[in-house]
Image 1: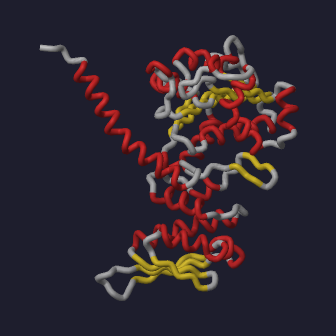
Image 2: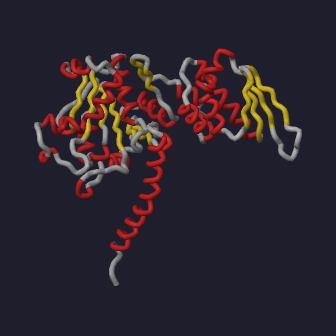
Length: 347
């Protein structure tokens, strides 16, 4: 990409700035997208006016807006130049990162490949997701805490499969609490396996995205991959394993302690959950919430927090999460006020 040419607008009262960037000819189509889909997304997200002629892109607007547009295009060209496909979502995430408080390069975040299978590559899509993935590499125990759709479990499983393929671990263990949404296994119909399977199904689904489906039963039969309820972890020491505890908000404090102390030599643990979705009966304290309070100062244990900005499902999911958070906050405050009022001594 050639250096930009800049000129000030003729009307000093407007203080418009014009800048031009030349894109390598072989990258123009990838940058602009099919039927200019990417270009329209860029124009919608940026305040500066964009004009494309050949392989030259001209920006016009206020100085700060033009500077941002230059940075965005530069990062997007780097992404396309690295051979990674550019999508409207990647553009949105890039603009979000560049307008945020971090200094990380969107190109570095969005081109970090975790796992590839049959032409599909799993990679972080937001800055917080990359920090989460980096934390998994750097620490023995990592907690990924955030709302649904932020990729906390999916990315952890991709790292687990990658570690197994690289022979960094000998097995993968995936576990969840077997009681959710107020249902107890003893009151459900069917065999124990039939009762457990619905709770573990999301983990199986993710595995099928990352490995050949015909290989999974063989690895499970050999004990290389284990998918089991949390209760099955009791009394074990798990060596040379990548262990993931999903839906950890529905563990009790005792269960969380039991699980974490299963850690053996050469193993890594990732715990994922959403503290706003606790389904424990009787108002029991969430083991995830307790762990966040108790373990925060221990070296080699890291807490990664993801937010609605990291939701990578349908665009509406992020808006739904935000709307519920706004609606629930006053209710939580009122509940806390009622509790405080109820604890006051009567006169």
